[in-house]
Length: 374
Length: 119
Image 1 (tube, chains in turn blue, yellow):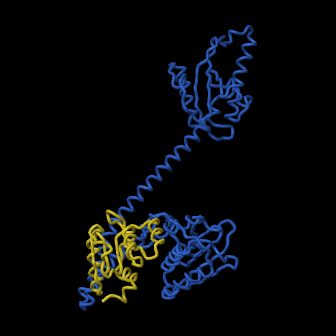
Image 2 (image 1 turned 120 degrees about the horizontal axis):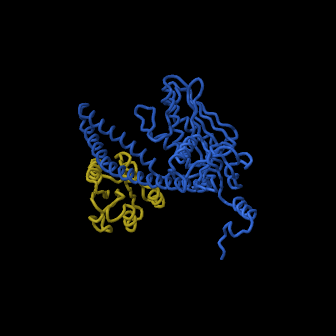
Image 3 (image 1 turned 180 degrees about the vertical axis):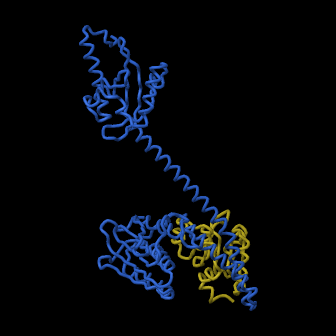
């Protein structure tokens, strides 16, 4: 086997042709610069990487291919090498970032070697576009992070289940004992000085029970029992349920259902829970007299929408209202709207909030047509 | 008789006493392993059992009880219910599930048939 070197060729022109063919057919970008860092040769692969034709860059300083952060660094390398012969990059491959003609950046693997012909000192840079590899690495990193996040959430779920179980059991005992105590005190016609503390124990147990139930709801997977719901009746029933509280609070509750929003496929109990949560929040948000409007209407992209708009103060800036434990109420747990979001996402839909002018907030539930299969 | 099985003494004793206050005869046990033979339960009207019984589940106990008393109402109480458990309970006609903490009135309302029988 013959070693392929320029010396195997008889004529200089043959040698030049071979070198040109190698440069033109190389998969990697190859750029030759002179001692002043001006580009002398720019092969087709380099053109593909940077988007410049050779005519556009030959004779120009190689810094044209570098983002500003690399340019000063590059001048330093060249100066140091000229003065001291110290090699920082020559002979060593490293990852750099290139600047394309269109201004975008491209990750590159760069290997630089010194090419001396006679007295002339040149440098050959061989560049490999790392975009695909970086994308694959990023995808792998994201997949790993997502997997770790899933594992972490599963661990949190298991911890939550354990805490709920371990608190729920003694709380059940305290609740049962305090209710027994209360019943006996009532039977014996005990005075307020004895009944009061017993009642307060029971109230505390009830608050803790409610909190545990909300945690449990959030920790558990949302499985849906889908069926067709008469939207108008559904909204009317919810409004009728909350009407007494709204009236007592001086709030006018109105329902408007579009004629073409007749039926939706959803889990009626869970959807009702979400709507109840929004209506209760709206009543509580309105301080004094105000209005709540419940609307149901079809939306081309989102399916059926049910919105609850109130004339309250709106949502404070910077509050991520659907985030777990985020609450604007002094005694809120920050679980209610997080569970609502979870329920709506289990339906394949969503929940959004918008500020109203001059004041107020509008929460909108969306359920895709046909519902989401269990 | 109301059969009550739960290893949590505060809950079991509290519930047993409340039921006795209401005139029920209650047999309370900390574990299903301590139960007398299931086919020798005099005047058994209802069973209330924890789900986690150590050597078996409340659901398995309900199934064993139903072998002898097919119509017996069984209430399973649990501090952490799961969808699978809820679905398993839903397939059984005479079994109800309650999540702890359970209020006495809530539990009592699940025993309507007993109102006619208790002394």
